[in-house]
Image 1 (cartoon, rainbow, N blue to C red):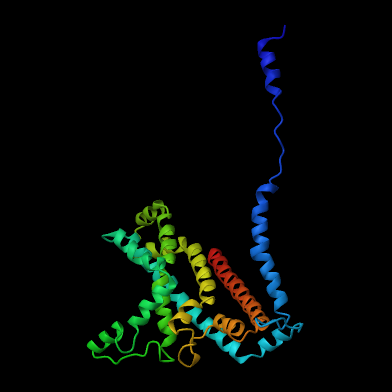
Image 2 (cartoon, rainbow, N blue to C red):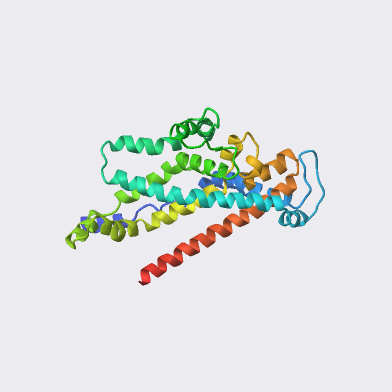
Length: 308
């Protein structure tokens, strides 16, 4: 008769084999969605850029002709410059101001819930509502901004009609609208910094500014790179604000027309879908190059800081 422990030991080794199933059935829905809504449109758009396809009918094969035409198109380069200019003008305040706002809230200002709501609430508004509100504020005749400029004895400004000011107007609008998202990213990162670092700094006699530059900002370096990268990509894709603010126009003397609006006008107004597709892929290549260059720049600065 087998010993109970021996029988138990033998019984424990006779466990039923687990089924070795495949996870492919769970991936099929995601694969289908990716192919239909990502890969297929990219491939079709690439083929489209090599043709003279129009909304009015089929076009012939032109190969790289559309790309050659786009590279020599002065309007495309002008609108691309407008887009890059807007990106630079909007990214800097959207990174710096959101950091300052997060620092103020993290320091424990009275009524924190109100500050958080006020900073983040505009981000929840649709772009059409935001643009409508700011076009009223910027109105040259009855606008709130010009009214107070007049009350202060300053001259009126053509916020949406002056070629030198129109781009700044769109930047101000965009910063007010989208800064809440960056604010939340910074605030979450600030709350994740260990208190032990601040306590050690206080033991060493560090004051507010010393702790800010020696503890807080170094700990936020990764978040700053993330925020700046996301903001550069988002700003390069600007379209809605300018299109709605100027009722589908290009601003005073075309001074605010982004490249995406030129692509839209080429494809859906002039019906040149093939040429519009070619410009889209050129713009996509520009976005990739700018993003990669920005990542390499920030990484090299980070490595040099660590070496020090």
